[in-house]
Length: 536
Image (cartoon, rainbow, N blue to C red; front, side, top):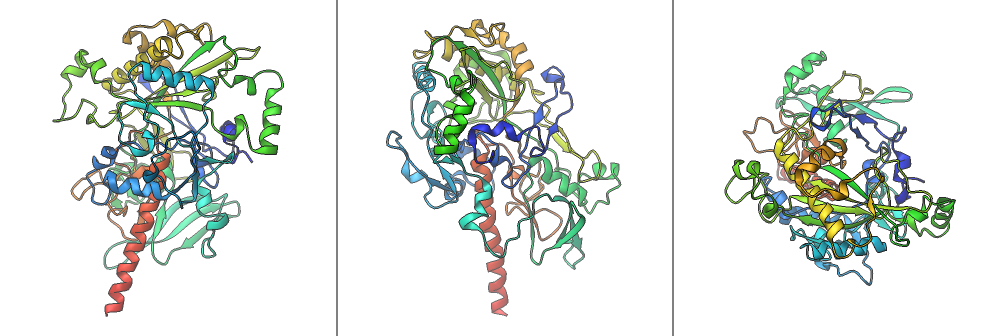
């Protein structure tokens, strides 16, 4: 039930339905460990994410420099995955939406606090472009974000293989952990022909006649490759794993979007949605409403207003920014003017990861604005703790290792705070920071945000890059542009681990786009082989 209930995503975390991966202490975030929750059920993270459909900019994908993966081409694959349901008030860019995919998507009806923040966005120089997060054409502005929810029910990747999309030749195995890929020797080298899995009844081998596709995410796909003998030779030797093919890039190049929550209190009732969940017995009534009518607070996810921002003007006098190396036409983060530096988004009530537990009970009200860093320069890694498939991987995100990441993220927080405290829609309704012992609402200088960011920065759950595609000659490329693992045949990877760089958006829609693209690549391969056989 919790999977379909968009507003109760937290019930799936820190439990048996979560991979429960935790980073080691990381020096640049005050030696904190960060919980990296991932969905451990059919549908994976699509069943516990924020439901946000933010594709990024077309330039993000052009930057990959890979044949078949341009922004124009890839946006069509993301579009193919969805069936969009508009609402009378929403000005949709119809030509950019899909109408026949398994993922049902609709815009979100804003709470009053979100309408006010939209007004503040505009007054602080972020013009309204209603469907900008679908078109990918606006790097500096605000708009509405479609959500993977329809008629009060979350839609997930599980919908692609169940209900009306189930096929008789597809067998779904749950409660099953993949250990490694098995290979047979052929004249052209090792060919993947089986998968060793662990079930409640012991080990089992599943054989493949044609090819195998790994879609286990940016933390688990590289560990499957490493246990299979594909990865950095020195890493495999540590665990007495025979190196089938040395792939130095497996588990490297880990990227994530780092976010910072900033909470504020308002005394004005009727703006936030806290009264639906935190005041008295309101949650019981809210749940009853969803159960009976699939309506109300729990029928959607309580994110509100969204904006992209370029920070060139705000950073132009910072010595680190001015003196950093850059490529022609790009800023120090590697972005063109058509790509945002950050995203700013809000919650319509108090809430976030489990460490945020100062709930506004006793008829108090709180909301947040969140700063999200795009194009991080810091890189982390995924390695094995052991070759036991039931052992969690070692995931070191290495957050804020590059000083430019800290510079941009602190400036994003300063801008976000100005929007809330000076913006036309919110300047008169903010009592102060939440909880009341915090004082960030008074900050005016970027440097004041440095301790706050180091203490509060956390994951946006957008891991990518650990099995990256790349051109021939790139020694760190794990895959070619057809998603095929280098050094072997019959094996592909299709998830966000394949992304050479992260998009400036959220990773849900790219994940679906990668899946749709992979499906076409598979069909292309086998249609070509069938044609060659027919010619013989």
